[in-house]
Amino acid sequence: ENNITKEGWNVFSSILCDSSSINATHGSNHTLQSLGSYRQVPQDIKMLLELNSDQDKSCVAAKKILLTNRHLDMRPLFDWEFDLLPYMVTWLDRFAESLLDLKLSSIFQFVRAMPVDFVDKVTEEKGQKCCRNSLWPW
Image: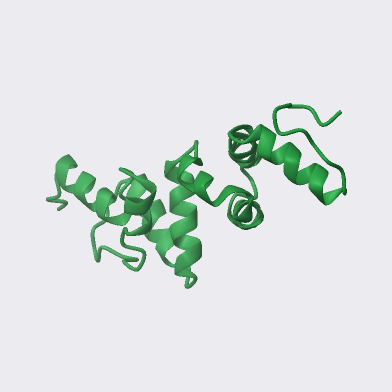
């Protein structure tokens, strides 16, 4: 007999994948793979337990982050300016392979926050000078 209440399953769910923030999701349990002989495990718990069976725990954490965050807040990364952009694109490419809308919106949000800096960076790489007060290099 299954003696776990709905509230109990909610606790298991939050232990396996705390969706309150990206950091909380990253800090969730990524090792628990089974609840023993319970037969009536809710589908979301089963899916999280199955995710935890992957030996690459970084991959498990990344997948949980992407499952719980359909919109990634790029603001904490803005202080790094464009130094972090290649890493972010690589991370999204590796873990969000089937989530094209998430990848594109995250990159767009990042670049949109610094349009002048982006234009300056691109034109500097091409060897052109750009007026800092202008949004357009021409």
